[in-house]
Length: 411
Image 1 (cartoon, rainbow, N blue to C red):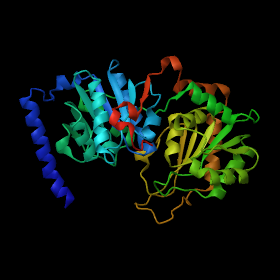
Image 2 (image 1 turned 135 degrees about the vertical axis):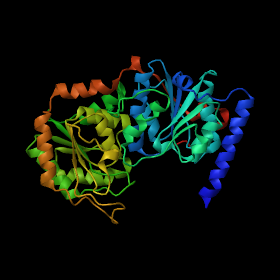
Image 3 (image 1 turned 60 degrees about the vertical axis):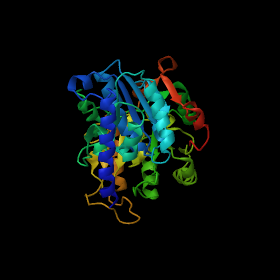
Image 4 (image 1 turned 180 degrees about the horizontal axis):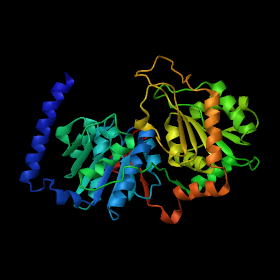
């Protein structure tokens, strides 16, 4: 019923916008040559999903490869700001609230970005997780640009795309440059960059032990979906890493996870340490780059580990299609899951289908293929480290958008 009301309303809004812009002489041109000539891009990302933000990062690299001199601005909030914070492919990272929560402030922040384009043609690119109708409306009110990408309200977007659950999240992000006539390699991997200060913090977290390899165990999910592996199996694999692999074990997590993560580290023993609540997202990326192997349930922190291409064993649920979110066919990753079954998963679902022996076997295989070494760790660090001299203008905080934005909750 609501959709039946919204659709004609959106068509009316879009028709009125086209008429006003036509008569004002400022309608955005959708000619192929004009689209290909756009050099200013606004990528909004205001959702709260870490994995989704990680999978949007290849879009930045694709745009930068196609248009080395482009002006690319990411505007977002929450986890997206942390994911994008140090990305060298971006010109700027600015704050913008979710238009589904604070529509007025969102429009004002987007307008600040558009003003920075100096009246030149620009394009807003919507990834799958930023496809809500209010996002398209907020961008429409932000200025006269081309709107392109995924949307649930096609009349509000000049170059609309629909979601395809059979395509990977990365590939869907990489479809967006093609809307403007640019080719993008479809095999780009997501990346989170970190600063020298982030790297120093991660090194401090790993200090105090012997010169043994470090294994990261990501045991807790963000709560967004039922993806859990039994704690006793994590303890068994951790002890295998310590005894057979000669590893120390590091357990990251959120501050809310600290109690359970500390307890689990205590069960594993003295070669295990919890760092729950002690890392930002870039600091967690640095921690993974400094480590030698990671074992993770399917959750946001797993995607952070993926961005560093640390040898990775993933405990995946049988109800989710691996192609959508997982690093399929990557030599440094092993996806452990049981037989597929359709969603939704049963209540209180845990990944009982994957055994300790299977995970330990994959761990041993990866450690043979990718032996721990200082040179391997340094190569991962150099791949994602952004030194101070290379850093772009960082985050424009909410209070800098307009004086009116200086009140309210901007967490």
